[in-house]
Length: 211
Image 1 (cartoon, rainbow, N blue to C red):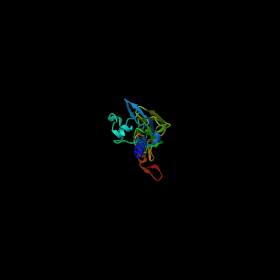
Image 2: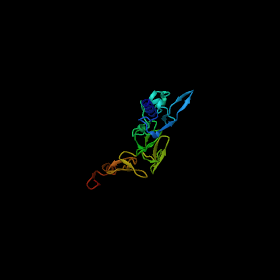
Image 3: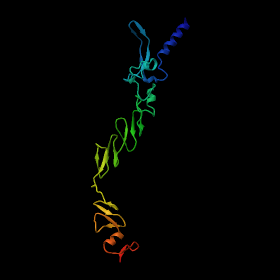
């Protein structure tokens, strides 16, 4: 008789222990009660959190509701501690997006030159700097075009002729070139410039025209 009571006591004790894959602090103790005339022994259940797939009925018995209740990022059950590892960023097993780094248990930060956008990290446009987690602003001298996700220059846009470069207020001929006398819209070599002015020779050593 004593042996039977001891076995019964041990069995009852085992029933109410938290599962080994859960921490006791995360479980909720349910006292024994009667349901439809049948006594239900005390037991532990997972803490309510609005998620079906981490319930014991789902883990042990496969009663997980619809397939959409299971996170798309994993085909097998993962406990809260698994989901909060470096691979995921919250208890629903959302994978950390590309170009991001986990920040604590429930968040992530986008890396430099990236901002958050719909659970992803997108690259900043050229000539822009990060402004908080979700926004960017253009560098000085540029205007933001948020529709096309780019920064446009405030400088007037010039199409300079060959052998010339735009500098602040206009196009200037490059080194070893001069504005053509016959066609001011062109930059010609010094030798050609000398010929246009009636000279026969050009000395690159002396950088001068001669007859």
